[in-house]
Image (cartoon, rainbow, N blue to C red; front, side, top):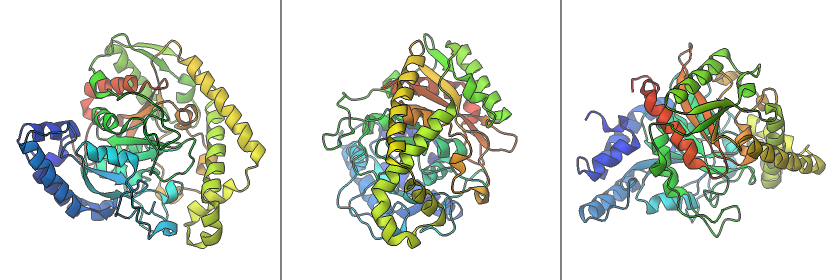
Length: 464
C-alpha cells in the first residue's frame, strides 16, 4: 500500500496482524509525518516519541511471540492534554497547571495501554477545556487544516486537527457540551461522546463533572468503535462509572440499516441559526439511510434553547465551583477568553443551578420518551461552517443555540459523522444520538452511512 499514515486505524491493525508492517515502522512513519506537518498545524503540545518507540518495540516482540492483545496492539494514538499521564506533563494548556506532572495514568489511557496502544504525545486543547482560541494562552491554538483562519472547534481541537491531517489514527477527547463532536465536525473526522458513565472519568481533568464525558475520536466511526470497546468498562474508583459488561460496539457494525428506526429532529435542523447547507446535508444523509434500509420518521424534542440554557448553567456553575480557588488566586495568568467564561460561573445563583438540574431531569425524560419508537436520532452537528477564529467571542455560546448540548444534558451517546463539504470548502457533519447505552446503535448507523458515502472520508487537502 501507499503511505500507511493515510490508512484507517482498522487498516493499520490488519497490516500489523498480517505481519506486513511492524509497530515500530508504523510509529516511525507517524513520527515523520508529525515532524513534517505539525509546525504548520500546532496540534501537539508534548511529544513522546522516545516512549512510543519503546512501546512499539515491546508490541513487536509480543506479536512475534503470538501474544497479540487485540486490534489496538501496536497502534499509535495521542491524548487530549486533559488526560493524566504518569511522568508526562498534563497541563490542560493552562499556566495554572504548566508544571503539573501526574504520578498516575487516567483510567481511559490505562485501558488503552492494556490494549497495546502506543502513545505519540499530548494534544492541544482550549484552556481548562473551557476557553477558546487565544493568542495569550500557554500554547498556540491548533489551526484548522481546511482553513487556518477558521476555528478548529473546542475543546478537543488538537485531536481534530491531528486526525484530519493523518498525524494520528486515533485519539481520546472529552465532551462537556460538544467538545468531541464540534472539533470532529469542523475538522472532518469522527467522534463519539459515549453514554454518561460508560467510560471512566478518573484522571480526566474535570470541567463540569455531571456533564463531562471521555470518548474516542478517529477518522472513521468504525475506528471509534474499536477505541470505545477498549476504554469502556466499570471503574470502582469513579463514582460516575456504571457497572456494565464489556462493550461490543465494533461487533455490531453493519453496512446496511435493515430494521433500524431513525428519528429526524426537523425542528433542530430548521432552527434559524442552522445554515441551509447544513440542513440540506442532513436531509441528504437521511435519504442515504433510507436507501440502506432504515425507516425514517420525524421526532419532536423540547426546544434546542432549553437544552442550551440548561447545559450552560450547569457547566458554568460547576466549572467555577471546581476551579474558583485557583482562579481567584491567579486570574491574571488565565487567558482572556477563559477568564471571562470562568467568571460567569460566579454570578450563577444556587437556585439557578438547582433549577437547571431539575430542568435537566425533565429534558432527559422527554428525550427518552421521544425515542420510545426509534433507535437513533439524527440532526445537524453544527450550525454552519466554522467561524473565523478572530470572531470567537467569550460568550458566543450564549448568543446562539448549542446544537450539541442535548446529548450532554440527557447523558445519551452521540456521534459526529461527516456529511459533506460546504461551498466554502469546509467539512459538514450530522449527529447520530441514541438511547442510554445504545452506543452500538449509534455507531452502527454512523458506520453504515460512512461506508455508503466514502467520498466524504478524506484527509484534509487530499482525497479519500
